[in-house]
Image 1: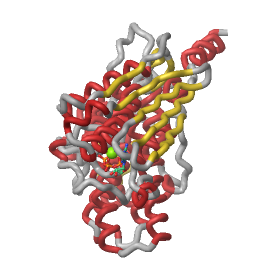
Image 2: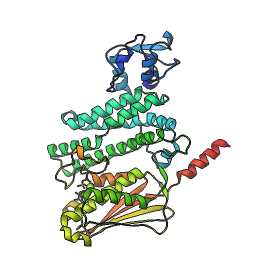
Image 3: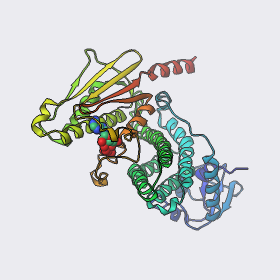
Image 4: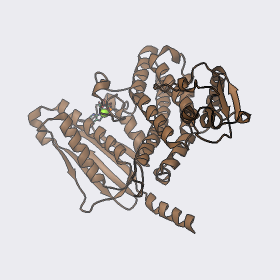
Length: 419
Ligand SMILES: Nc1ncnc2c1ncn2[C@@H]1O[C@H](COP(=O)(O)OP(=O)(O)OP(=O)(O)O)[C@@H](O)[C@H]1O
Ligand SMILES: [Mg+2]
């Protein structure tokens, strides 16, 4: 039978001696070579960290199973293999809003992240000679360590679970640039033909889709955990998001970053304020990325004195089903040779990717994967993203986002629960 380490180890790792403290270090690496004791039905502090405080006092001998750390590694490996066979769930905005208490999100995180991480570890291992690429080996290490920590954690112990997720989010901070560097290394080293490039792009897209989904979930957990319990909490989702306002904020950020007086970004707001359910953080990332692309093309192709005649225009509108945002620039458009490559994770005209130290924190921009990631995030948010390229003139980017109202569903659900 398959051993659930979450129940056995996560809930009840304990030792019969006081050496437990040495098992939990500040680096988040939990185990040394000491034998561990697992119990399945003990009372008292749950979770591995909880057991540090409680030591052996709350468990009876009959609840406990002792395994060596080597055996534990075997369990983890077996779990990894088991989880990598599972199908990762995809979440809609609605699913995310439905789980907006820390306890519900913790449960979701604890169920879904190991499946998704195991899938990505498996994906890395499928790449030939992955150990030979330091960035791939680093990604493999990051995901393996997080998988292990998640399987050892108890989602019912919210304090220690939050700490564990904090460590996990810090560990995963540079996954996108590391992936970008890994792809560049493979691309340069392997002389890939068209077919292999397409396969590598599909691989990267699947990897990033998993990353997008789990990043949103852990971010949702942080937002839910810091909600005021007296208020209705929707975590990272804003149920009354004004897309025009997000466009204005994104335009300000890009303008400030570029600091070029003569380049203007005009946001045309609709006559009536639009409100819809959306994750504003990600909408803003998308808009900043598109505005940066538009600004970069305009600045690079035209002299400063001409920029005033080439404003970037943002238009926002909506009907009952969707919100549409168009960004139009007159930066000269995408060159013929580049047009079919812009959706590739392997292609960028940037001389070199951004330095990590200069990174703004956006998962989309800076690593030469802005266009494919924008499309991926737009789709993930229940929308779509298209561009119309006018060679020699400019680019019109269209972002469409579906309107859903999770608030209504939530109300209906809570009515049903109260019936
Ligand atoms: N509005 C635009 N006008 C002209 N060319 C564009 C425009 N948007 C994208 N491109 C072209 O598509 C390429 C790919 O864009 P993408 O956003 O994926 O990467 P990047 O902007 O080079 O890097 P990053 O987004 O990571 O900062 C760009 O390098 C540029 O040549
Ligand atoms: Mg870009």
